Image (cartoon, rainbow, N blue to C red; front, side, top):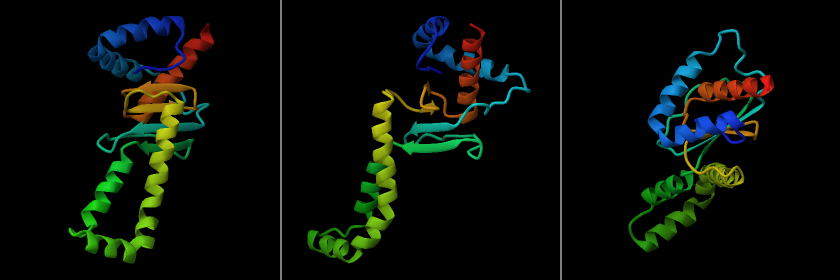
Length: 165
């Protein structure tokens, strides 16, 4: 539930959440469910980027209302494992297999490799230090929340609190 660019009050709340991570989840659940039904969860949201590994289940969201990108940062390991699983056991047979299937292998793995490489570069750019992380509009990073609507609710609450100041 941690967000970059916190306000002074948010700094105190985040410091408490870091000391008591079990409490952060409880507060998050309570605060998201306390959102008024009339609030437009997607108001002002244009881009959502999710950073996770392949073991994490990312849920929710309405990608038609904003641009959504999900980056699986361990995708390169998964691609390597998939290639190795298909390779014959001997080196000569593996070379022959790769030579015969090189175009098809490249066609299958290129999108996964590009997505993983872009995700790693963006994660470094945003200084993401743990997963899952959801970046909203390139400005707010929410940690530990695998549900996109929950993360958006936190961002909207943060924006509303900042607007009242």
